Image (cartoon, rainbow, N blue to C red):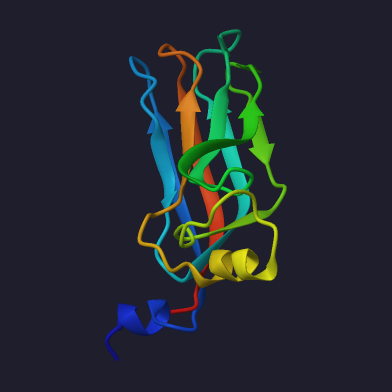
Amino acid sequence: MAYDATTFRGAGTEIIRNGFWNYGSANTTVRDLIIGVQHHIYTVLSITFMNYKAIGSANVGCTVSLLGYELEGGDSQQTIQIFRVPAVDGQGVFVWNDKFSFNGVEPTNFTGAMDGVDDQDAIADQAQDTAQKLRMQKGDAADDWSVSITYIDQNNA
């Protein structure tokens, strides 16, 4: 029987996904790890950073952040730092395995901070079309990282 990808990614499904990057030298460009989709919830299980420079050579670090809706001010497309990978010596590994979740898209905008059930429901409803994104950015252009991510994608469409 042929594999029907839409059956396994359709509404009401939950799948484990992963991604891999060689985040090499000569840039500090922001890289998207997850690009949100409306009515999806993403639960990050782990992100592994391996310094693939020579032994004895250190990377200065990497920042992982969420580009999304900031609840205190009710602001769209804000960078919210999740964690920072410390300097790692050559061939060393840093593993982030504290779980966290985020919605695929932003809520319908509300004024000021989240201060009521209606605001809380707006966040869950994901009625906007502005994708939230999990991102990484190197601390120095000379750094060399191999990065892998494992996460659960829940489709509640």
